[in-house]
Length: 315
Image (tube, rainbow, N blue to C red):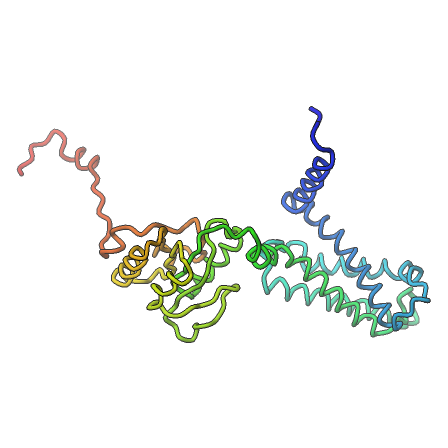
């Protein structure tokens, strides 16, 4: 089957599919993707460090210098990144621990190159005698570029797209600024704010007032819910306090419904014990049992029928 559409659009579609396959399929594809860009980063970092070390003297034949020493920098740095399992990092969910691991890997790589550059009587390498400032500057650029590449997708999903046209979800107020609220904000960002867009949080802890959580501000205590709903044109309320008793839960629910909030959801209490990871799929609508503080009583009619079938029962 031949594609008879616009050749330019077809080419863009093919290229987009290639990039998608590289970043979403096998671990080998992801390794090749990041390894390719890391080699470019190592080359660029070394070139910039030579420029800085030689005071931006463009009369120097930098291409020849790179040809002599680049291989050592590439082999050592890529090898250290492999040893420190940097290529196992999940691009979308990179965290502080991953960034610290990248810092450690770059430091170790630069120290190894510095040691190899020291003069000795046993062998002479092309990098022997390189100025120490080159390794310092090279390490700075390498760290900056590699870290930026690793956080780029997370930055796009949780910061840039939040400010763009992709914010189409319901304007959502989150009740609770603890760990549960933080995980909900993070999951909203991961999903591109398609269903819910957080406009703020409420929490009775005074220490959290005015603080920001992934760019979402704590607007005050729970008593300000009505004011915030009106002022911020809230369309959905999510109660992210699993331990909340039925009385305050009912008060929050009634207040939200009175102000015509279309969606009111709650994090199930089971999360407090068995499910530490909160996500939007686990949210529930508030049931009558939540509001009156009673447990659901289910009658096993099939079991009762089996028990009394064929027996004389005195009522």
